[in-house]
Amino acid sequence: MASNRWSDHYTRRAKRENFPARSVYKLQEMQRRYKLIRKGDRVLDLGCFPGSWLLYAAKLTTASGRVVGIDLKPVTEKLPAQVTVFEGDVTTGTDGLAEQIGGNYHVVLSDMAPATTGQKDVDAARSYRLCRTALQFADELLRPGGNFACKIFQGSEFADFSNAVKKRFKTERIYKPRSSRKTSKEIYIIGIGKI
Image 1 (cartoon, rainbow, N blue to C red):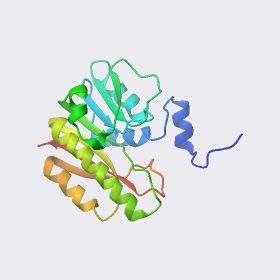
Image 2: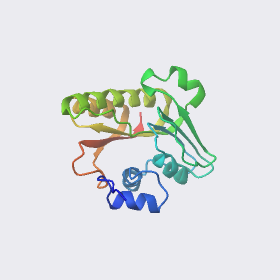
Image 3: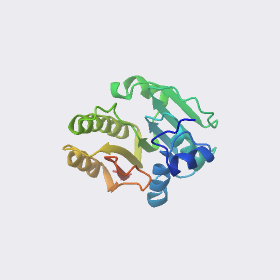
């Protein structure tokens, strides 16, 4: 049996706990620290494939909440009744999707990552564009007082994005989960309390 070179204790733990990917522990760490999601919340998960964040968010919101995910790839996990997933390209804007997904969200999450090239500057620029898209969704669909968490690759536009979040939220935090791979350039920018 061939082993996955990316497999680690988080990967094995995710499998044991019935999550499709280890990324769930990044959201779990942010939740423990910042209490982004509450029972009954409406949560929008951008780049939701393969579904770990959807499952965890659904557990937090309970059946009284609603979790909506959007991704280019279909999510094949069995999901709770309060979770709906749409296949779509978020980079085309909210116009076509807004009618389907609604608004008035308490939380907008983005764990989106670009197809990487291995060139740090190119990958960071692509990540920045996805982050600006996620922030546009938050501008249009996140209710006042709502929360935002977005993955970004560190690069020359990092400060610009951080400042954009600061302008829109009462509190802005930069967070590197312990469960992120040590070699990863990813970091999360968190906005708490949309103004």
